[in-house]
Length: 94
Image (cartoon, rainbow, N blue to C red; front, side, top):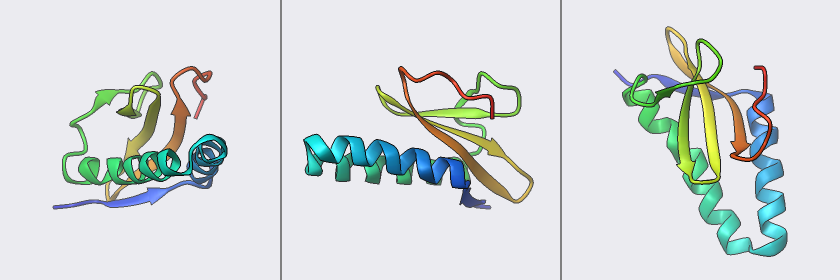
């Protein structure tokens, strides 16, 4: 069974901020990273426990690119994307 992927408002804003920053320098790279980040949770929807445990209990992390991490939680009926971070950012306290 494939779970539904739900993005929190915080995660959507994180992604938007990252893409805007990259697009100022390289619109093509911004599209590539955006597509990769948006697609990453789909594999977690199929295999929710495939990725490593998060630094905060109850979360998991997908390293999308050496610089970007998607933080999510596995709920009974969905994957909830909580944050998208640059690897050098301070880890959020979800």
